[in-house]
Image (cartoon, rainbow, N blue to C red; front, side, top):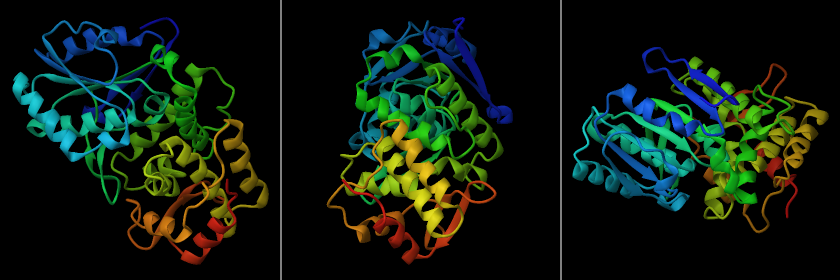
Length: 340
């Protein structure tokens, strides 16, 4: 590993794996592939193939495109067809290289092909490095909502190479900052303004601890969805014109307001939600023209919900999952949100 790098272990017994973070860490890829004993590799990449090191084994390169429009069951089927054509077996490996949507889709294809084949992620966006690539959640979308079809499939390793971030446009940085902002309220406050390596490593370490305690969303892992219930609804309502991190940022502000509406936190803590999001230059207002009723309907599709409306909300003892939140409280918090 390069001198300026960090490693975090996601501790899941026999499914444990390392997450290496730093400039140039992709150079560890051939060693990781060799350690798996793979004889072939399928590289699914939204970046130029030249940006991926020689793996030391025969490989096929499958181009991908980042974006929610490509997170479909049809894309998973096509990937599996390409794996078959290349003769990939359960003893081989899949490598994903791209943003969060590529990570999600390739991870699901790896989980399903031959009932599970090793996968190594090379996340290339800030959003993917601080969130999507770690934890083993894989999923694709349905017309009804985000991430409704998926499973848990832990990678064999994750390489968060900060060099990949050098060419990100400003909006992609904000997309990742949305996830960093919500970390402030679930166990990693004060990330704003710290060096990039610290921000990514601290966020990954937080997620690793939560995933190790609750791999399959039975309890503590719900914390990672802070701000996501409204965030996902906003993505759907805008036909994904609003990016994931932008939706999560607005959802984080809303989570503060809803927690205040329910008497779980005081006005100062409500205002802190807005201040943290604004510090990252993230949107904190609902887009104009959206119907509150439609947003509530979309929020009912959230995967955390077992009855009624469910949200991860701050409270006197810290954040936690709150089930069956009264609709009038949700409507009141939405009505009080600032709008563009």
